[in-house]
Image (cartoon, rainbow, N blue to C red; front, side, top):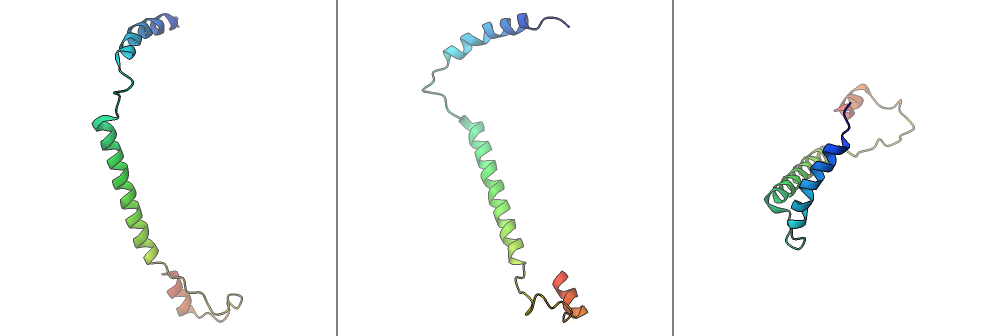
Length: 82
């Protein structure tokens, strides 16, 4: 396999002057940064809305005596599964 250090050093010599031309005080995320942030915000909003909808379907009723499972009829057990 050929030695890659020569090509890496050659690439770095071409890229270093480009990096020095960028003014550190003027670098901003730009349009792409805004689009990514907006997409993440929309995704989080959608997930929160979906979670709220699913949590609304949850039934938190507990049986009168959790230790006495023999008192549960087949119809009540079927209703709990839904």
